Image (tube, rainbow, N blue to C red; front, side, top):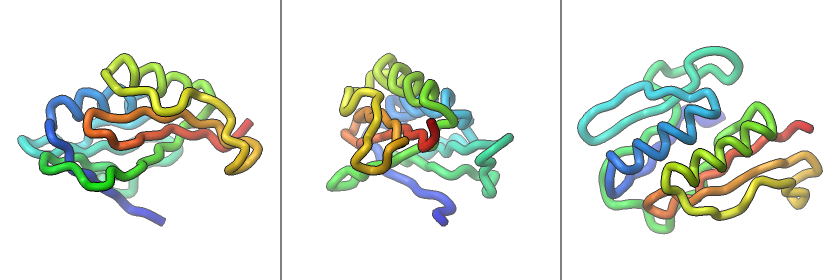
Length: 128
């Protein structure tokens, strides 16, 4: 349904470093990189991006207010766990440890990390 989305960040270098780490564990790669913007996408396998330019963009500028919540698919619960660990190692702030979120549905397994600007980024797996 959604082709791509983007957010603005206060420090492109700092945010790029965090997103490179957390998205790599979910199978995303850097698609485009310029002085003020970068994009990420899945270029092979399940969930392959339709747009070679990528699905998720960050560009330097004043962060959005309020900060949006962005959720990325994980192929497994282990992927959610690794995303969370990578996010904290890259300087993200814990905003919800990996676990079941039964209020959404019985198999919703997710973790949340705040990026350097306070965006709530999530990885979720909807399977057992």
